[in-house]
Amino acid sequence: MIAQTPQPPYYAVIFTSVRTNIDEGYGDMAVEMVELARQQEGFLGVESARNNVGITVSYWESVDAIKNWKANARHLFAQQQGRDKWYLNYKVRICRVEHDYTF
Image (cartoon, rainbow, N blue to C red; front, side):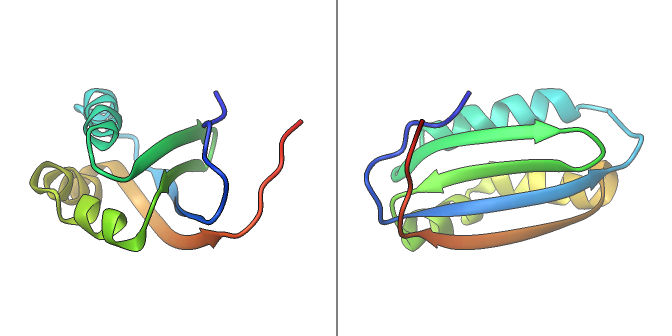
């Protein structure tokens, strides 16, 4: 599903990853993180797709909202689990969305 974002400007966090073969708890944690993100002040939406490379884009009202999400204790735990067992590598990009349009 495509996230319904407000008129720009807003921010996007692009999380690109390559998984390991370890699934132990990954699916449950992914669902939990989306639900937890939805509860965070400033969260606007999320889109995700995975094949050989996974890409998850979350949308936020501000850089401060992103910083607060990054510092969330449960999210910090999920990040550590990701580094320890679920991801071979990943990259995070934070962008300001200046313009969007839809069809």
